[in-house]
Image (tube, rainbow, N blue to C red; front, side):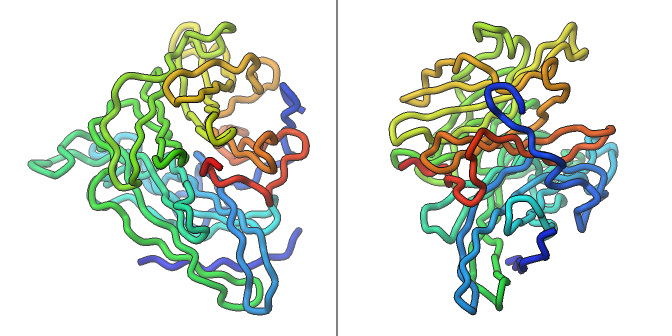
Length: 350
């Protein structure tokens, strides 16, 4: 079990009414571990906790990925791990360090693309991550000897307050084998919500988006057919690839999914990148939401990873994402009017 201690610190317009907030939330230099060369794939949830003197805080928790070692024959994309950061005001963030460093079992090379969802208790969350292993010398494992092993999982739990403005969390139950297996090489970005008795995991498997469902966070079936296919939108914003889907509740019986889309001319030359949305009432048939909220040619930057969140009644949006600034990935936030960080929904449908 790994324990995290969080303490308060001194507080130091885009398409379709999305406003890009000034400055990054986190930069690689803010991290306390890894190579401090990159940060990406942010996923954010809100907790509410009361300290030992009776003060209640809204706490944002962010899981993210970062590189921990360079490339090698066994790990050709380098080694990557998952960390956790926190904020007491939605703007100033502190790093709590590594929660899933690479080097164990099925993620000897890569633990990346994290997501987080409430388990419904208000004090427990499940964290998922993409996993890759070094298959060198592999002879027999429960999950096979392919490099791309699937999706891992662990649990985050609120323990209690340790003093004024200080709180304790623990990390437990890291899955001993992938909770979803039999994935393709270009699989990634698992995003999970809970609705109607099941956890629903959306993910990209280039070039399309898939969804698998399970009543448990510990076992998902292997992917079947895609539910959203690249190149089928009316405007062509995702002609060649859909990536980084983010699934969330709209009402108890309607759902939304936002994703990045790329258009190459030709591959690997990027012609344009946008972020658009889809809606559904059954998680199988998805209808495109007419307008994309971000377009590289209009806004001048590419959204590399996306975690769409909602606040209030669910119609105010905050998009935590990665931007490349001066050759370095940073975490940023874009939001619609009246999005409130202290009222983020937990992706459990009402």
